Length: 488
Image 1: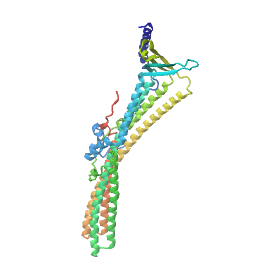
Image 2 (image 1 turned 90 degrees about the vertical axis):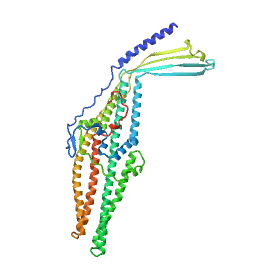
Image 3 (image 1 turned 30 degrees about the vertical axis):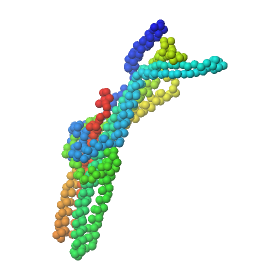
Image 4 (image 1 turned 45 degrees about the vertical axis):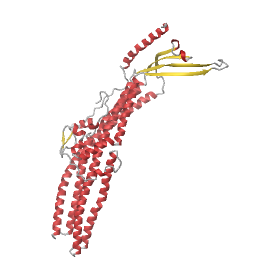
Protein backbone atom coordinates (compact mmCIF):
# COMPACT_ATOMS: atom_id res chain seq x y z
CA UNK A 1 0.00 0.00 0.00
CA UNK A 2 1.35 3.41 -0.93
CA UNK A 3 2.36 5.91 1.74
CA UNK A 4 -0.24 8.39 0.52
CA UNK A 5 -2.98 5.74 0.83
CA UNK A 6 -1.99 4.97 4.41
CA UNK A 7 -2.03 8.66 5.25
CA UNK A 8 -5.53 9.02 3.74
CA UNK A 9 -6.77 6.08 5.81
CA UNK A 10 -5.37 7.59 9.03
CA UNK A 11 -7.13 10.89 8.31
CA UNK A 12 -10.41 9.16 7.54
CA UNK A 13 -10.16 7.14 10.77
CA UNK A 14 -9.57 10.30 12.81
CA UNK A 15 -12.49 11.93 11.04
CA UNK A 16 -14.80 9.03 11.90
CA UNK A 17 -13.64 8.91 15.52
CA UNK A 18 -14.52 12.58 15.90
CA UNK A 19 -18.10 12.00 14.72
CA UNK A 20 -19.36 10.29 17.94
CA UNK A 21 -18.08 13.19 20.00
CA UNK A 22 -20.07 15.58 17.84
CA UNK A 23 -23.15 13.38 18.24
CA UNK A 24 -22.80 13.42 22.04
CA UNK A 25 -22.44 17.16 21.98
CA UNK A 26 -25.48 17.48 19.73
CA UNK A 27 -27.60 15.55 22.22
CA UNK A 28 -26.92 18.08 24.97
CA UNK A 29 -28.77 21.09 23.57
CA UNK A 30 -32.09 21.73 21.86
CA UNK A 31 -33.20 25.31 21.44
CA UNK A 32 -36.80 26.36 21.92
CA UNK A 33 -39.28 25.77 24.72
CA UNK A 34 -39.48 22.39 26.44
CA UNK A 35 -43.15 21.51 26.26
CA UNK A 36 -45.23 21.01 29.37
CA UNK A 37 -48.90 20.08 29.08
CA UNK A 38 -51.15 22.87 30.39
CA UNK A 39 -52.87 22.31 33.69
CA UNK A 40 -56.63 22.70 33.47
CA UNK A 41 -58.48 23.52 36.65
CA UNK A 42 -61.81 21.67 36.56
CA UNK A 43 -64.52 21.76 39.21
CA UNK A 44 -64.69 18.64 41.41
CA UNK A 45 -68.32 18.02 40.41
CA UNK A 46 -70.85 19.05 37.80
CA UNK A 47 -73.01 22.10 38.35
CA UNK A 48 -76.06 20.33 36.92
CA UNK A 49 -77.76 18.07 39.41
CA UNK A 50 -77.43 14.35 38.79
CA UNK A 51 -80.92 12.90 38.98
CA UNK A 52 -83.35 10.65 37.16
CA UNK A 53 -80.94 7.69 36.95
CA UNK A 54 -77.71 9.69 36.78
CA UNK A 55 -75.26 9.18 39.62
CA UNK A 56 -71.70 10.36 40.34
CA UNK A 57 -69.05 7.69 40.11
CA UNK A 58 -66.37 6.15 37.99
CA UNK A 59 -67.83 4.87 34.73
CA UNK A 60 -66.95 1.32 33.77
CA UNK A 61 -64.39 1.73 30.94
CA UNK A 62 -65.64 -1.32 29.03
CA UNK A 63 -69.28 -0.25 29.25
CA UNK A 64 -68.44 3.31 28.19
CA UNK A 65 -66.32 2.06 25.29
CA UNK A 66 -69.35 0.18 23.89
CA UNK A 67 -72.20 2.15 25.44
CA UNK A 68 -74.68 1.11 22.72
CA UNK A 69 -74.81 -2.36 24.22
CA UNK A 70 -76.55 -0.91 27.30
CA UNK A 71 -79.68 -0.47 25.15
CA UNK A 72 -79.82 -4.24 24.51
CA UNK A 73 -80.78 -3.74 20.88
CA UNK A 74 -78.97 -6.18 18.53
CA UNK A 75 -79.99 -4.20 15.44
CA UNK A 76 -78.34 -1.05 16.78
CA UNK A 77 -75.18 -2.95 17.74
CA UNK A 78 -74.95 -4.52 14.27
CA UNK A 79 -75.41 -1.14 12.55
CA UNK A 80 -72.60 0.42 14.56
CA UNK A 81 -70.26 -2.47 13.76
CA UNK A 82 -71.01 -2.06 10.06
CA UNK A 83 -70.50 1.70 10.26
CA UNK A 84 -67.07 1.27 11.83
CA UNK A 85 -66.11 -1.00 8.92
CA UNK A 86 -67.59 1.02 6.07
CA UNK A 87 -67.96 4.69 6.98
CA UNK A 88 -66.08 6.90 4.53
CA UNK A 89 -65.23 9.67 7.00
CA UNK A 90 -63.61 7.06 9.22
CA UNK A 91 -61.62 5.65 6.31
CA UNK A 92 -60.39 9.14 5.46
CA UNK A 93 -59.37 9.71 9.10
CA UNK A 94 -57.49 6.39 9.06
CA UNK A 95 -55.69 7.47 5.90
CA UNK A 96 -54.62 10.70 7.63
CA UNK A 97 -53.09 8.61 10.41
CA UNK A 98 -51.01 6.71 7.85
CA UNK A 99 -49.95 9.99 6.28
CA UNK A 100 -48.87 11.42 9.65
CA UNK A 101 -46.95 8.24 10.46
CA UNK A 102 -45.05 8.52 7.18
CA UNK A 103 -44.26 12.18 7.85
CA UNK A 104 -42.92 11.29 11.28
CA UNK A 105 -40.65 8.66 9.70
CA UNK A 106 -39.43 11.20 7.14
CA UNK A 107 -38.63 13.70 9.91
CA UNK A 108 -36.71 11.04 11.86
CA UNK A 109 -34.49 10.35 8.86
CA UNK A 110 -32.88 13.76 9.41
CA UNK A 111 -30.89 12.37 12.33
CA UNK A 112 -29.02 9.93 10.11
CA UNK A 113 -26.40 10.41 7.38
CA UNK A 114 -27.27 10.10 3.70
CA UNK A 115 -25.29 7.94 1.30
CA UNK A 116 -25.51 8.22 -2.48
CA UNK A 117 -23.98 6.03 -5.17
CA UNK A 118 -23.18 7.76 -8.44
CA UNK A 119 -21.67 6.87 -11.75
CA UNK A 120 -21.15 8.81 -14.94
CA UNK A 121 -19.73 8.65 -18.40
CA UNK A 122 -18.84 11.96 -20.03
CA UNK A 123 -17.56 12.46 -23.59
CA UNK A 124 -16.11 15.87 -24.44
CA UNK A 125 -14.26 17.57 -27.30
CA UNK A 126 -12.01 20.59 -26.99
CA UNK A 127 -11.83 23.56 -29.34
CA UNK A 128 -9.77 23.04 -32.46
CA UNK A 129 -8.26 26.51 -32.15
CA UNK A 130 -7.25 26.26 -28.49
CA UNK A 131 -7.10 22.61 -27.57
CA UNK A 132 -6.36 20.68 -30.72
CA UNK A 133 -9.93 19.47 -31.12
CA UNK A 134 -9.25 16.19 -29.37
CA UNK A 135 -12.10 14.07 -27.99
CA UNK A 136 -11.90 12.29 -24.66
CA UNK A 137 -14.08 10.09 -22.50
CA UNK A 138 -14.17 10.32 -18.68
CA UNK A 139 -15.48 7.46 -16.55
CA UNK A 140 -16.28 8.01 -12.86
CA UNK A 141 -17.99 6.15 -10.02
CA UNK A 142 -18.16 6.64 -6.29
CA UNK A 143 -19.99 7.12 -3.02
CA UNK A 144 -20.99 10.47 -1.51
CA UNK A 145 -21.96 10.74 2.16
CA UNK A 146 -23.23 13.72 4.16
CA UNK A 147 -24.47 14.20 7.68
CA UNK A 148 -25.75 17.35 9.34
CA UNK A 149 -24.95 17.35 13.05
CA UNK A 150 -28.04 18.37 15.00
CA UNK A 151 -26.09 20.56 17.41
CA UNK A 152 -28.97 22.85 18.37
CA UNK A 153 -31.85 20.40 18.16
CA UNK A 154 -33.64 21.67 15.06
CA UNK A 155 -34.08 18.16 13.69
CA UNK A 156 -35.07 16.77 17.08
CA UNK A 157 -37.68 19.48 17.50
CA UNK A 158 -38.97 18.66 14.02
CA UNK A 159 -39.30 15.00 15.03
CA UNK A 160 -41.03 16.07 18.24
CA UNK A 161 -43.51 18.11 16.22
CA UNK A 162 -44.15 15.26 13.78
CA UNK A 163 -44.72 12.84 16.66
CA UNK A 164 -47.22 15.24 18.23
CA UNK A 165 -48.92 15.65 14.85
CA UNK A 166 -49.27 11.89 14.58
CA UNK A 167 -50.78 11.67 18.05
CA UNK A 168 -53.16 14.54 17.24
CA UNK A 169 -54.34 12.82 14.06
CA UNK A 170 -54.90 9.61 16.01
CA UNK A 171 -57.08 11.53 18.43
CA UNK A 172 -58.93 12.99 15.45
CA UNK A 173 -59.62 9.42 14.34
CA UNK A 174 -60.89 8.61 17.83
CA UNK A 175 -63.08 11.71 17.77
CA UNK A 176 -64.50 10.59 14.44
CA UNK A 177 -65.36 7.26 16.06
CA UNK A 178 -67.14 9.05 18.91
CA UNK A 179 -69.19 11.11 16.46
CA UNK A 180 -69.89 8.18 14.15
CA UNK A 181 -71.21 5.81 16.81
CA UNK A 182 -73.37 8.60 18.24
CA UNK A 183 -74.74 9.59 14.82
CA UNK A 184 -75.69 6.01 13.98
CA UNK A 185 -77.54 5.64 17.28
CA UNK A 186 -79.25 9.03 16.97
CA UNK A 187 -80.51 8.27 13.47
CA UNK A 188 -81.58 4.79 14.55
CA UNK A 189 -83.58 6.19 17.47
CA UNK A 190 -85.05 8.81 15.18
CA UNK A 191 -86.23 6.04 12.86
CA UNK A 192 -87.78 4.08 15.74
CA UNK A 193 -89.46 7.28 16.95
CA UNK A 194 -91.07 7.89 13.57
CA UNK A 195 -92.19 4.28 13.46
CA UNK A 196 -93.72 4.57 16.94
CA UNK A 197 -95.55 7.72 15.90
CA UNK A 198 -96.75 5.96 12.76
CA UNK A 199 -98.06 3.05 14.84
CA UNK A 200 -99.92 5.42 17.16
CA UNK A 201 -101.41 7.37 14.25
CA UNK A 202 -102.49 4.22 12.43
CA UNK A 203 -104.16 2.80 15.56
CA UNK A 204 -106.01 6.05 16.09
CA UNK A 205 -106.90 6.09 12.42
CA UNK A 206 -108.68 2.75 12.83
CA UNK A 207 -110.53 4.05 15.87
CA UNK A 208 -111.55 7.25 14.10
CA UNK A 209 -112.60 5.29 11.01
CA UNK A 210 -114.96 3.27 13.17
CA UNK A 211 -116.31 6.45 14.74
CA UNK A 212 -116.88 7.99 11.31
CA UNK A 213 -118.72 4.90 10.03
CA UNK A 214 -120.86 4.87 13.16
CA UNK A 215 -121.69 8.54 12.75
CA UNK A 216 -122.46 7.98 9.08
CA UNK A 217 -124.92 5.21 10.01
CA UNK A 218 -126.58 7.43 12.59
CA UNK A 219 -126.82 10.24 10.04
CA UNK A 220 -128.56 7.96 7.55
CA UNK A 221 -130.94 6.82 10.29
CA UNK A 222 -131.74 10.42 11.13
CA UNK A 223 -130.25 10.10 14.59
CA UNK A 224 -127.41 12.57 13.93
CA UNK A 225 -126.79 15.71 11.92
CA UNK A 226 -124.49 16.63 9.04
CA UNK A 227 -122.26 18.75 11.27
CA UNK A 228 -121.30 15.81 13.46
CA UNK A 229 -120.55 13.72 10.39
CA UNK A 230 -118.30 16.40 8.89
CA UNK A 231 -116.49 16.85 12.19
CA UNK A 232 -115.83 13.11 12.30
CA UNK A 233 -114.51 13.26 8.74
CA UNK A 234 -112.28 16.24 9.63
CA UNK A 235 -110.82 14.30 12.54
CA UNK A 236 -110.24 11.22 10.36
CA UNK A 237 -108.67 13.15 7.47
CA UNK A 238 -106.42 15.12 9.84
CA UNK A 239 -105.00 11.93 11.30
CA UNK A 240 -104.58 10.40 7.83
CA UNK A 241 -102.64 13.50 6.72
CA UNK A 242 -99.98 12.82 9.33
CA UNK A 243 -98.96 9.50 7.82
CA UNK A 244 -97.19 10.62 4.60
CA UNK A 245 -94.84 13.04 6.37
CA UNK A 246 -94.03 10.44 9.06
CA UNK A 247 -93.27 7.81 6.41
CA UNK A 248 -91.07 10.28 4.49
CA UNK A 249 -89.15 11.17 7.64
CA UNK A 250 -88.66 7.48 8.44
CA UNK A 251 -87.24 6.89 4.95
CA UNK A 252 -84.89 9.84 5.36
CA UNK A 253 -83.58 8.32 8.60
CA UNK A 254 -83.01 5.00 6.81
CA UNK A 255 -81.14 6.71 3.98
CA UNK A 256 -78.99 8.61 6.43
CA UNK A 257 -78.15 5.38 8.22
CA UNK A 258 -77.14 3.77 4.93
CA UNK A 259 -74.75 6.63 4.14
CA UNK A 260 -73.25 6.44 7.64
CA UNK A 261 -72.60 2.76 6.95
CA UNK A 262 -70.81 3.68 3.71
CA UNK A 263 -73.61 2.23 1.60
CA UNK A 264 -75.98 3.66 -0.97
CA UNK A 265 -79.33 5.15 0.12
CA UNK A 266 -81.97 2.44 0.25
CA UNK A 267 -79.50 -0.29 1.16
CA UNK A 268 -80.93 -0.81 4.66
CA UNK A 269 -84.63 -0.24 3.95
CA UNK A 270 -85.50 -3.92 3.89
CA UNK A 271 -83.85 -4.81 7.18
CA UNK A 272 -85.28 -1.78 8.98
CA UNK A 273 -88.85 -1.89 7.61
CA UNK A 274 -90.00 -3.96 10.57
CA UNK A 275 -91.23 -1.66 13.30
CA UNK A 276 -89.44 -2.16 16.59
CA UNK A 277 -89.95 -0.29 19.87
CA UNK A 278 -87.74 2.58 20.90
CA UNK A 279 -84.92 1.10 23.05
CA UNK A 280 -85.40 1.57 26.78
CA UNK A 281 -82.98 3.86 28.58
CA UNK A 282 -80.87 2.10 31.27
CA UNK A 283 -82.02 2.71 34.83
CA UNK A 284 -78.64 3.88 36.15
CA UNK A 285 -75.82 5.76 34.41
CA UNK A 286 -72.56 6.72 36.14
CA UNK A 287 -71.15 10.15 35.33
CA UNK A 288 -67.42 10.77 35.80
CA UNK A 289 -65.99 13.88 37.41
CA UNK A 290 -65.16 16.77 35.04
CA UNK A 291 -61.40 16.14 35.16
CA UNK A 292 -61.86 12.48 34.16
CA UNK A 293 -64.10 13.46 31.26
CA UNK A 294 -61.57 15.98 29.97
CA UNK A 295 -58.81 13.37 30.07
CA UNK A 296 -60.94 10.92 28.10
CA UNK A 297 -62.40 13.12 25.37
CA UNK A 298 -60.48 12.77 22.08
CA UNK A 299 -61.15 16.37 21.02
CA UNK A 300 -59.42 17.68 24.15
CA UNK A 301 -56.54 15.24 23.71
CA UNK A 302 -56.17 16.29 20.07
CA UNK A 303 -56.09 20.00 20.98
CA UNK A 304 -53.38 19.31 23.57
CA UNK A 305 -51.27 17.39 21.04
CA UNK A 306 -51.67 20.19 18.48
CA UNK A 307 -50.38 22.60 21.13
CA UNK A 308 -47.38 20.32 21.71
CA UNK A 309 -46.63 20.28 17.97
CA UNK A 310 -46.72 24.07 17.71
CA UNK A 311 -44.46 24.38 20.75
CA UNK A 312 -41.88 22.10 19.11
CA UNK A 313 -42.02 24.12 15.88
CA UNK A 314 -40.95 27.21 17.80
CA UNK A 315 -37.72 25.31 18.50
CA UNK A 316 -37.38 24.38 14.83
CA UNK A 317 -37.63 28.07 13.91
CA UNK A 318 -35.14 29.14 16.59
CA UNK A 319 -32.57 26.60 15.39
CA UNK A 320 -32.25 28.63 12.19
CA UNK A 321 -30.47 31.34 14.23
CA UNK A 322 -27.55 29.04 14.97
CA UNK A 323 -24.76 27.57 12.85
CA UNK A 324 -25.28 24.39 10.86
CA UNK A 325 -22.44 21.90 10.83
CA UNK A 326 -22.39 19.04 8.38
CA UNK A 327 -19.86 16.32 7.70
CA UNK A 328 -19.29 15.26 4.14
CA UNK A 329 -17.11 12.84 2.30
CA UNK A 330 -16.75 11.01 -0.97
CA UNK A 331 -14.83 8.02 -2.27
CA UNK A 332 -14.64 7.28 -5.97
CA UNK A 333 -12.72 6.44 -9.11
CA UNK A 334 -12.14 8.49 -12.21
CA UNK A 335 -10.35 7.38 -15.39
CA UNK A 336 -10.16 8.08 -19.09
CA UNK A 337 -10.81 4.45 -19.99
CA UNK A 338 -13.13 1.90 -18.50
CA UNK A 339 -10.27 -0.56 -18.01
CA UNK A 340 -8.40 1.82 -15.73
CA UNK A 341 -11.45 2.79 -13.63
CA UNK A 342 -10.98 0.32 -10.75
CA UNK A 343 -7.28 0.89 -10.11
CA UNK A 344 -5.32 2.51 -7.31
CA UNK A 345 -4.23 5.35 -9.53
CA UNK A 346 -7.78 6.36 -10.42
CA UNK A 347 -8.92 6.62 -6.82
CA UNK A 348 -10.38 9.93 -5.64
CA UNK A 349 -11.58 11.03 -2.25
CA UNK A 350 -12.61 14.09 -0.30
CA UNK A 351 -13.86 14.78 3.19
CA UNK A 352 -14.26 17.54 5.71
CA UNK A 353 -16.71 19.49 7.79
CA UNK A 354 -18.81 22.38 6.57
CA UNK A 355 -20.23 25.15 8.71
CA UNK A 356 -22.97 27.56 7.69
CA UNK A 357 -23.72 30.59 9.83
CA UNK A 358 -26.62 32.93 9.06
CA UNK A 359 -25.27 36.48 8.75
CA UNK A 360 -28.01 38.48 7.05
CA UNK A 361 -31.58 37.37 6.30
CA UNK A 362 -33.42 40.72 6.43
CA UNK A 363 -35.16 39.63 9.63
CA UNK A 364 -36.89 36.63 8.06
CA UNK A 365 -35.63 34.16 10.68
CA UNK A 366 -36.83 36.19 13.64
CA UNK A 367 -40.10 36.93 11.87
CA UNK A 368 -40.60 33.19 11.41
CA UNK A 369 -39.90 32.64 15.12
CA UNK A 370 -42.48 35.27 15.99
CA UNK A 371 -45.00 33.67 13.66
CA UNK A 372 -44.41 30.25 15.21
CA UNK A 373 -44.80 31.70 18.69
CA UNK A 374 -48.10 33.24 17.66
CA UNK A 375 -49.26 29.87 16.31
CA UNK A 376 -48.33 28.30 19.64
CA UNK A 377 -50.39 30.94 21.43
CA UNK A 378 -53.34 30.25 19.12
CA UNK A 379 -53.08 26.52 19.78
CA UNK A 380 -53.19 27.20 23.52
CA UNK A 381 -56.29 29.35 23.09
CA UNK A 382 -57.96 26.61 21.02
CA UNK A 383 -57.13 24.08 23.72
CA UNK A 384 -58.65 26.27 26.43
CA UNK A 385 -61.70 26.88 24.24
CA UNK A 386 -62.09 23.14 23.65
CA UNK A 387 -62.07 22.55 27.40
CA UNK A 388 -64.79 25.15 28.00
CA UNK A 389 -66.89 23.82 25.11
CA UNK A 390 -66.61 20.27 26.44
CA UNK A 391 -67.66 21.29 29.94
CA UNK A 392 -70.58 23.27 28.55
CA UNK A 393 -71.68 20.32 26.41
CA UNK A 394 -71.73 17.93 29.37
CA UNK A 395 -73.52 20.42 31.66
CA UNK A 396 -76.22 21.07 29.05
CA UNK A 397 -76.87 17.42 28.28
CA UNK A 398 -77.00 16.49 31.98
CA UNK A 399 -79.76 19.05 32.46
CA UNK A 400 -81.57 18.04 29.27
CA UNK A 401 -81.41 14.36 30.17
CA UNK A 402 -82.86 14.85 33.65
CA UNK A 403 -85.63 17.19 32.50
CA UNK A 404 -86.66 14.94 29.61
CA UNK A 405 -86.89 11.95 31.95
CA UNK A 406 -89.32 13.87 34.16
CA UNK A 407 -91.29 14.97 31.10
CA UNK A 408 -91.40 11.38 29.84
CA UNK A 409 -92.80 10.15 33.13
CA UNK A 410 -95.59 12.75 33.00
CA UNK A 411 -96.36 11.93 29.37
CA UNK A 412 -96.72 8.25 30.20
CA UNK A 413 -99.32 9.16 32.81
CA UNK A 414 -101.05 11.48 30.34
CA UNK A 415 -101.10 8.82 27.60
CA UNK A 416 -102.55 6.20 29.97
CA UNK A 417 -105.21 8.66 31.12
CA UNK A 418 -106.02 9.67 27.54
CA UNK A 419 -106.41 6.03 26.53
CA UNK A 420 -108.84 5.33 29.36
CA UNK A 421 -110.69 8.57 28.61
CA UNK A 422 -111.06 7.67 24.91
CA UNK A 423 -112.34 4.19 25.72
CA UNK A 424 -114.80 5.57 28.26
CA UNK A 425 -115.93 8.30 25.89
CA UNK A 426 -116.64 5.81 23.12
CA UNK A 427 -118.66 3.61 25.48
CA UNK A 428 -120.67 6.56 26.79
CA UNK A 429 -121.23 7.92 23.30
CA UNK A 430 -122.58 4.59 22.09
CA UNK A 431 -124.76 4.53 25.19
CA UNK A 432 -126.08 8.01 24.43
CA UNK A 433 -124.64 9.50 27.62
CA UNK A 434 -122.38 12.12 25.97
CA UNK A 435 -122.38 14.14 22.79
CA UNK A 436 -120.25 13.60 19.74
CA UNK A 437 -118.07 16.62 20.47
CA UNK A 438 -116.87 15.05 23.71
CA UNK A 439 -115.92 11.87 21.88
CA UNK A 440 -113.94 13.77 19.26
CA UNK A 441 -112.07 15.71 21.91
CA UNK A 442 -111.16 12.46 23.69
CA UNK A 443 -109.86 10.92 20.47
CA UNK A 444 -107.82 14.00 19.58
CA UNK A 445 -106.32 14.05 23.06
CA UNK A 446 -105.38 10.37 22.78
CA UNK A 447 -103.58 10.87 19.47
CA UNK A 448 -101.77 13.94 20.76
CA UNK A 449 -100.71 12.22 24.00
CA UNK A 450 -99.44 9.12 22.23
CA UNK A 451 -97.56 11.17 19.65
CA UNK A 452 -95.88 13.28 22.34
CA UNK A 453 -95.03 10.15 24.33
CA UNK A 454 -93.31 8.59 21.31
CA UNK A 455 -91.35 11.76 20.64
CA UNK A 456 -90.30 12.08 24.28
CA UNK A 457 -89.24 8.41 24.41
CA UNK A 458 -87.03 8.97 21.38
CA UNK A 459 -85.64 12.20 22.82
CA UNK A 460 -84.82 10.50 26.14
CA UNK A 461 -82.89 7.74 24.36
CA UNK A 462 -81.16 10.27 22.11
CA UNK A 463 -80.19 12.41 25.09
CA UNK A 464 -78.47 9.44 26.65
CA UNK A 465 -76.53 8.93 23.42
CA UNK A 466 -75.52 12.60 23.50
CA UNK A 467 -74.45 12.16 27.12
CA UNK A 468 -72.26 9.16 26.25
CA UNK A 469 -70.75 11.19 23.41
CA UNK A 470 -70.11 14.18 25.70
CA UNK A 471 -68.42 11.87 28.21
CA UNK A 472 -66.03 10.72 25.48
CA UNK A 473 -67.28 7.17 25.04
CA UNK A 474 -67.36 5.10 21.88
CA UNK A 475 -63.76 5.03 20.61
CA UNK A 476 -61.76 2.87 23.01
CA UNK A 477 -63.14 -0.42 21.69
CA UNK A 478 -61.87 0.35 18.18
CA UNK A 479 -58.52 1.96 18.95
CA UNK A 480 -56.16 -0.23 16.95
CA UNK A 481 -53.65 2.31 15.63
CA UNK A 482 -49.99 1.49 16.18
CA UNK A 483 -48.58 3.23 19.26
CA UNK A 484 -45.33 5.05 19.45
CA UNK A 485 -42.80 4.16 22.17
CA UNK A 486 -43.94 5.72 25.43
CA UNK A 487 -47.28 6.86 24.02
CA UNK A 488 -50.34 6.16 26.13
